[in-house]
Length: 381
Image 1 (cartoon, rainbow, N blue to C red):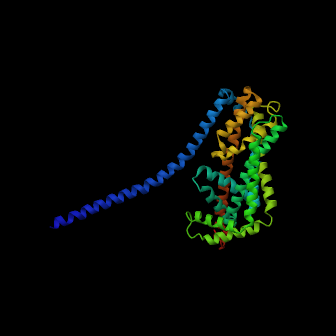
Image 2 (cartoon, rainbow, N blue to C red):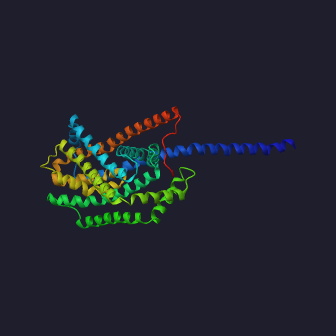
Image 3 (cartoon, helix red, strand yellow):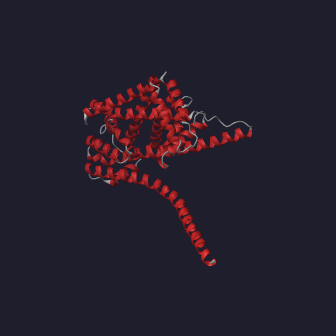
């Protein structure tokens, strides 16, 4: 009897051990799978983008990759300096809208925030860029709600510029006598850009929309931080709207001009690269290069700023003007442009992130040493 009574206990214990073991394996495997997904997704995006670009390039003509490599190797050390200078101008112009939209944010910190978020958004899974932005805003004593509201306005403004770019590009090509593309489509894009900006101004005049936006943002934030109050977030966004609507039109105008300048700076980097690889102004005038770039710019909406697809489109457009003999030089210039804008901005993001972390840690140590509170974190976050 005693032996029979102990057997179920032993079986239950073994069963519990099995369940516990499977549970431990599940806990171990889940993070590993998440890390694997984090690595696999960007790799797949890059591969698909490059394959798409390769296919499109195949329609342009057979590429002499040896000549492409020679053109890249011909880049002189001093030529890196103007490329870097144009990249820095691009990043500063890109940061001006956030500086305009977020109260209490300096231009330098806006540049840091954009570069740090770009780095996090590239190498980490979502919402890594949001986490970095909020952490930076908090360390600087900027209300994170104001900061993220400014990021949203920045994004809407950038989409408007992305839609306006082909209109300006076609105008430049027409001036240069090399008009190409669908003028009707450009008109539609211009209408959408104007409608987007008009909708933004109209929505900011009503209190209901900012409150709805604040509650929606709070629901998202609750997934990553407990204790978020949707009503408090809604009130904070409404207050932000009240402060911004007083002088939003001039701020919005400055943001639009800055972002258009950022796109032109991006095109300037490509123009410099073309000159350095042998495509002279007689072969590819500046207006043609910038016009072609702006016309194709909406393709940056695709992952990694249209890597592969945008490049192939630019190659086709520029080769159509310069001729197939200059295809290797153009492809080499596109490679230099991509290395400068993508890897260069990531390198700058790494530098500013390291500087920000060290500065934040030093501020915390100093505050603890003299017995003061650390820098304010803003209310509502």
